[in-house]
Amino acid sequence: IEEIEANRNGLIDLFYINITGEITFSNNTFNNLTFNGTNCQFYGIDLTSSSNDIECNSNTIGNSDSDNIIINGDTDHYMIYISISSGKTATLSSNIIQEINCSNSGTNNQLHLLNTQGSGTVNISSNQFRHITSTSNYSTTAIYGLYQNNTGLNNIISKNRFNDFEVSTTSAT
Image: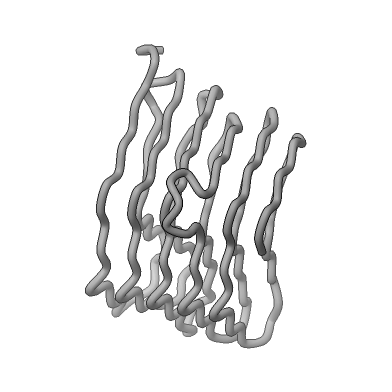
């Protein structure tokens, strides 16, 4: 996906897949995206499988141009969001998330680069996260490079690279 500019309220979910089957989501690129809106919540890749494995590999969100993806909203945002069921495995490898500029004016203002949920197992390796900025009017702003909130056992997280994250607030509300 290249060159999207959206001014709207509500949910923006570029790729939402919620099925019972196996999901393989690989070799996709998202560039030059701008999103603005009140109550605007952004999901780049949103994958849920209730009974099979998930593979999310070699995707690129943002290119090397400065501030390649701009999100102006007042709620939480997710670049890659995965939900995996018990007894199943989600594999996330060789994804690149870069040059994201998130500006939030609301009190819920977290930027999640890779977020995992559910009760399955995750294998997260060799992903790169670089040049990420989040600015807010509230002191609760945050960038989560890897937010693992699943309860599965035997998770493997290795060889991921994180560089150049910046969080700034304009007031101490």
